[in-house]
Length: 232
Ligand SMILES: *Cc1c(COP(=O)(O)O)cnc(C)c1O
Image 1 (cartoon, rainbow, N blue to C red):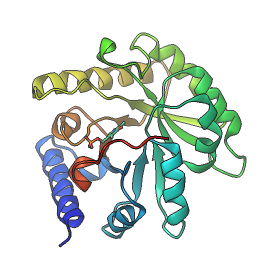
Image 2: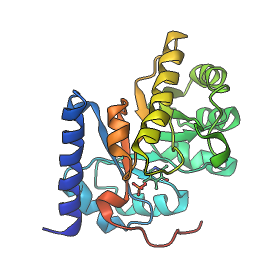
Image 3: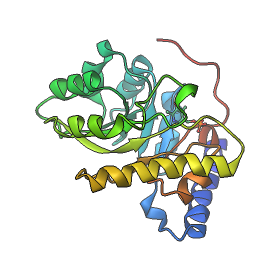
């Protein structure tokens, strides 16, 4: 078996185990394969192993891969920081965007979503550990922003996405994810219809699944360590 095949089998097995331990059905958790820095051939191999959803952070790199993989029925997810001048191509080529954290970007994605495509699925990225990172809206901004995004015609607000500050402390991992899950519940009580919690990566999968993640974004555990970051 190839390395990717071994790792994929391992990750799928872990997700099943974590779901069983949490009393959840494994089909309630989508595995998003984070393919940033990976070649089109690696994505093709992962697809042949059964993975269908792939996450990319860098637009230019993603477009090149998409062009090589048009024969595969891949669902592409954009998960990286978004500059305004990138929204048009993102709206034209992706099915999901997880990293929406301000209204201006959401408005542009909605305006630029081509008419012949279904609404773009989006998650609102929330910054749960405030100081740590510049990406993500604050917990207190989330309700108002979610309501504004939900009103945009060509977007479908699906849920919340979070990247907690990295820690090996599983209790802390769980507290962060629980806070996001609680926020999603609160937004739903305010009339939103969120069905997605995009949370959990290679190093905190179990905590995320225990706290209700419906979509885990996994790179390293599937493909091995990443080479140095590419630039655009
Ligand atoms: C790179 C990345 C991941 C995957 O991280 P791993 O630790 O390699 O699993 C998940 N989410 C986002 C937003 C990323 O940028």
